[in-house]
Length: 296
Image (tube, rainbow, N blue to C red):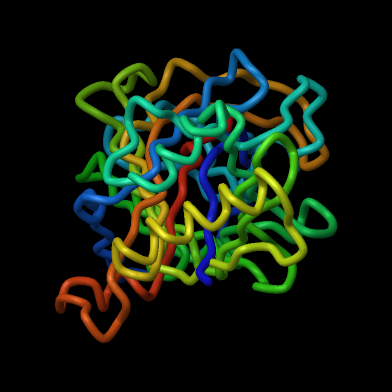
């Protein structure tokens, strides 16, 4: 079986200023798949957003607000030690789900709710073991320049120290293989935070149904696995609407955090043997979310 998750609630970042390098990362959001499980995260509820703490590299991209720093750590709200009642990173959204016929039929047939199908994302141990910017080196972990409003970041982790998984009503039903997280931030036409957007995506990864499930949990996991397998055999996180102005600031175990609302999907991707050439580059890095900056 194959593995990945379907709902976001919050993430955490932290940073440090390092001597710059040079190379551009050239990240690019992949096209939307015809088989995808829609996700939403609303930081006014119990699932939603990105939690982040300062301080990473100073943000000097064009139109970035003054005196801001990158978030170093990335993790789900439920993993961030934020005392705001978050239980998940994100929730599945029936209205934005496409090509998930078996999943939709199982949920309808058993009177289940898409909103109980959630993603949890973060460290398996201490919070500092989560996805992070590593040495925070320009041209390696991130790229920016003063002549462009675009910043690119790659968050990585020890594969044994993190996990992304789908849950139904609090029961883990499916897990996903490790991948880095790619993020593309556009600071927009002005220095106002309200015109910034974020895109994020992962590499295609495998998924696995959790062993020992029974009843509804087992049936739903098998339906999800069937749809993802029919759609290509691998899955990928894709988020293209991390919009600003919906951040909630709070104190977490990694310091000051920002929790963000967003939408996106977990989408099915073909196995490598049937990949188009463009997909080869995507397999090198996974990207999810999180927002750009923490105030000084």
